[in-house]
Length: 418
Ligand code: PMP
Image (cartoon, rainbow, N blue to C red; front, side, top):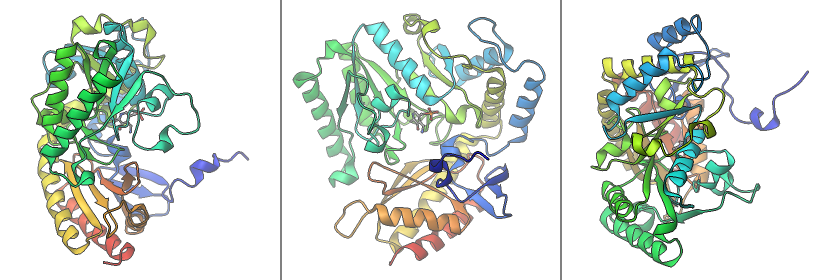
């Protein structure tokens, strides 16, 4: 008998039988409240009936056509629906399967359009696990160690991580923009730079919202130097932050937007959006892959965007996110090991620190494991592994947030000495 890779075996004690909304029903009969939702993928909750039905119906019509050869209806409809939520200047969309692929397509497009090699990324950013996407990732050495050489032309600038520096947000933004300017005169010539690549909220890098003033500073520098601003909305997009796109907390409009995860409630599809004049500088046949823009995934994407609109899930993310953040602050009073709580909407992180203020990964892991014992699924993140992240489905109810907070309180009591 063949077994799973030993690496997969250690991953989790939970084996799913079926799932619905915010709930995972395990094969051993236990019922878990899911505050991970596949890292924000199942935006409309597990197995939303409209998403399930759309996929079922599409499967009987056509499962797949290579959309660069034969176009199909779900992709045209998805493009229209995305057009309704994208900034109006981003009027052209290209599809792939995963976030990593879409990030790579965005990088190619920026390089092809500018004829420049360099990409500036920001410390703690996560952009995927394929070799080029991992080369752009600085959310932890575990994502890039051991398979060098990485893609060249990637340069890292600081992120305004106010809590870690012990500064207020304005000071952190000023510092990070100054350091970026210094990078652009000392090492990475603007005329050789194709793109700035950043997430609106650092995801795997620690659930840190990018301050609006920092995004605005990047936009200003990008305009000044003809550099493309790429926003990776893979984790923060599709309503999760309480706005449709995470960057909409600022006035900034990107040149290229990358989306995946929540766009199709768990079906694999991703997209990049850009102004048509920019997109036409790319070469579609050189990007994407066999399954890009798959018909069933696109139909699920259409249903997902309809559900987000019809059930007012962006508003729900904002309201339930506020409820969650309020509850977390109460827990923080009881547990000084929680040094910082931050996030936007249903994307909340708790940073654990020692009495000396250093990252406390051991407690974070202990709390995460204790939540599983209390039937609440959570995840850790951050380069130092000391952030617990909570990512409920966008359909989460008031009662489920209260229940999640109760279970988290039990886990904190188990796993900390506070
Ligand atoms: N960008 C961001 C911001 C992500 O969070 C992720 C996945 N965690 C990716 C890119 C990569 O997406 P995928 O795993 O679908 O390749």
